[in-house]
Structures are given as structure tokens and as C-alpha cells.
Picture (cartoon, one colour):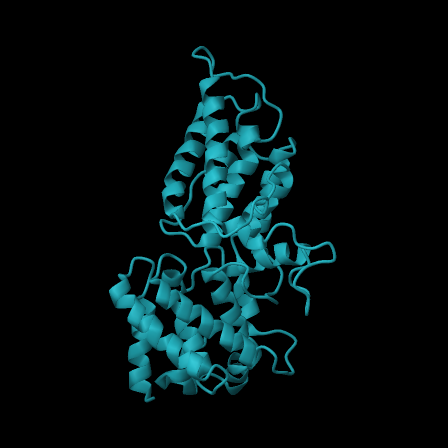
Length: 343
């Protein structure tokens, strides 16, 4: 493939977003995925992996089912073909980008596309070698696949973005009843789902966080009804984004959210590949050559992003918040004490 043609493709990939029409985006995805699947360990694999990474914003929203399946199968094939190859690197460039994945969407930030374009001669050979390393290309393939379909790939480096770690700490203080910030303002800030078309992990994390904090919002500690109004508004806006995909889990496989501190942590860990890797590590799911830990995995990890589970969780949270809102008095905005988590 000549550089001008590749430059045209790269430009087209960069224009694909969550708002792209399927009839425009799906052919680009299918072409890119088909080329990668045809030679997932080949010399041009980095080009096609990069294309799917650039189109991951579209693929993580609501792509055509054929395009989504083709993209995931191609990415899994690239991980399989490239991920087991040995190299001399202690780390890879993609790992340095993981802290910036707060919204799980990249805009050609992988460094991979430039290696196929006319300007590649300006890239130092040492950087080029690290960017082309099979471990680096496989790393980006893992991240893209996990953003599109959470908990379906292993051996993603553990570590949520620093901002998410900070949010976990802040909310942990609140749900454990020793806030070190203004809890009312913190909960109002948390009630805003910033992305209009969030990834599955980001949407799930938001709704899980709302559930983890709803008991505090409806307790006597909160005296401003604006907190409850904001949380209700945020959840009501998020629920329609879940879609209506059928549940694939057996009875009892949905997560237990009775511990607000643990649920709070999961709420932010769900929002990034590195955070989800922490959840996987906790359950032993990511251990090499093992599908589950010694006691077995009672709750499939992908149940955390199951639309049916999240619909039920949102209704439970809304019920608690609406009940708390009804208890406010007209005189001073005070409400009855409720010192337990959502149930």
C-alpha cells in the first residue's frame, strides 16, 4: 500500500467518532479489521491496529454488530500473534499513555500511524523501534479491545489513571463518613456524566458510583436538596444510554453492591483499562493459564457492565434518592436520618 493511500485512510479513521453514521463508519472498520485479521502478526499489523484504536470511540458506542465483531476478532488475533513475542524492553510506549485514558477515547495519540506515513523519516530510529515493537502493538490492541468490550482481554497493565485514584480517595472519605472535602459539592460534581456517548466502562462506573454514594446523599449529613436533585438528574440522563441488550448472566451472577466502600472503588476502576485490570487482578482472573481463582469466580467480571444489571442498579439508586428527596421538610430542608447503604 502506498503512503498516499495510507494517508487517506488515516485521515478517514481520524474522522470516525461516536457520532458517525454506521453506513459511513462500518465499511472503514470492516476494511481495517479485515486487513488486520488477514495478517495479524505481519509487518503492517501496527497500521491496522492503529486504525481500530482511532475508531474505538465509534466502536465503543453503538457500531453495527458485524463491524464490532470483526474489529474485536481482529484485535484478539493481533494480541495472540504479537503478544507472545519476546523483546528486550522493560516497558512499552503505550503504557505511558494509560494515565491519560480518563475518558477511554484516543484521537490518533498512539504514535503508530505516523510510522506508515510520509513523515516517518523524522522519527528517530530508537523511537521507531519501540513503537513497532510487537509488545507495544499488542498492548494497544489489548487496550482497544478492552474499551470496546470490557473484561475480554488479559494482561493489561494494572493501574487506574491518577485522577481516578484521587476520586476514589475523595469518595472513600465520604462513604466512610470522614469527608475531607465538602461532601455536598463533591456529590454534585460526581452527578455529571461528562461524555454524551460514554464507553461501556465509563457509563457503568458512573452508575456504580451513584449507587455507592446514594446512602450518604440521603442521610442527615446532607442538608441541601440540590445534591439529590443533581444525582437524580444525572442518573435519569444516563439510563437511556444503556440500551436494551439482553442479559447473558445466570441468576445470582450480578455483583453484590452492599458494601459502599468497595462499590465506590469499583465505580472508578471500571472507567479505564488499567482500572479494570485492577479488578481482574483482585479476582485472580488475569493470572496466566488460569480462568478463575481457586474458589471459582462466582460473579463474572463483565456482569459489572451488563445493561440489565445496571438498569436494576439505577432503579434501586433512584428509589433511594427519591425517597430521601421526599423526606425533606419545607421549613429547613432537613431530612430523616438514614445511616445505611443503599439496599
